[in-house]
Length: 294
Image (tube, rainbow, N blue to C red):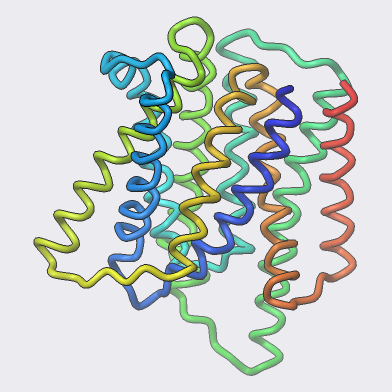
């Protein structure tokens, strides 16, 4: 089942990616905290629904799962900030190379193993993710040059533009590694999901106090804020079960949702794909199919 859970996570998280970018205008310096409020609020509601529905959970589970929750939430906040400084098609492939980071940690530190074919599939997906970031960066530079535009260094070559997706990649990869470790006998999947959602709710409360009460900002809910909430919550639920069953392979597979994010952008925004982009997507698709056959 890990394969199907991974596909569900890819579907929903790719949608969350797209609408998170649309809801993160560069001029709004509080956009990341607003996203935290929205996502954390809905996740908290979902957690209470699960608890009232009879899912086994104790407050101790929050403490047990806190290392993974903290790393995931920190990486997401950094990812939301980064969306203000760099294009989605460049940021997302870098961020989602975290699956490769998690796979390497599981391989070297936990002794998890892959078959030769699975290793080949992971290489295909990881290579496609990196290739996509290179293609998109070159394409953006060419378009700017053709239009006679001088790129703002804050959004292209500055340390801050690249730092956020790189930090996301490292922290989220470590979070996935810790997640796989905790789900291997320390906490059940459903309890871990509730613990994560309630921790995110606490961060949402902090964000609300800071943005609305301290900074006196007005919150306006739009579809760009509402859709990532639903997509993120659904994707997280599927992700937990996929990671619990097969961390070393599911992690890099799910990281390929950046490929789906690009497709969402092309379909929703009516943009066209180049031949190289189609080729990269095909390579990633081959890797995903191989994993499904194993």
